[in-house]
Image 1: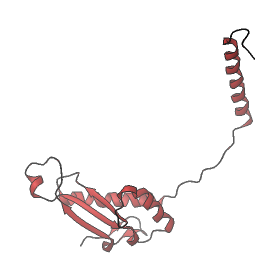
Image 2 (image 1 turned 135 degrees about the horizontal axis):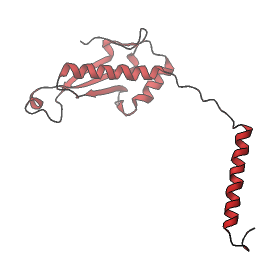
Image 3 (image 1 turned 120 degrees about the vertical axis):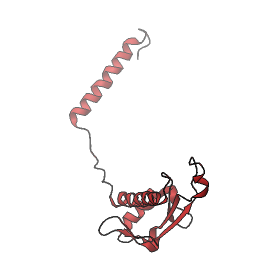
Image 4 (image 1 turned 90 degrees about the horizontal axis):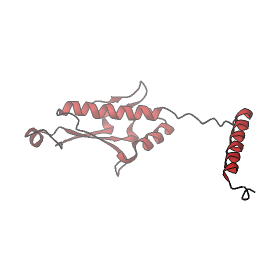
Length: 143
């Protein structure tokens, strides 16, 4: 059984929420790729993540996006190295990074209005463009 993924001091993924499956990797690797199961398929039950608020859990579901399987588990695969242990380490780090990103609450947008000077400059520019276009017209066509 694998050990828990500690994201912060309050948030962790217990071993019971993790399912690790090693499969054969694709791509280059010679005969080794046909013999050794180095690709890691890590499934994380999002309901089992401890210490996560409801809003952070909802953000995590949005961030997971297409990586959620039919049962609502997060599916992370790693085949970056030719070593199973390093691929497992990489997959666990990616899960921790994703959860860490979900913990950050987005900033609320502060609605601002343009200043009076900015409004004047914008309208002056529009008037100038209109004047340029009027000068380009034939003498009898304007207005």
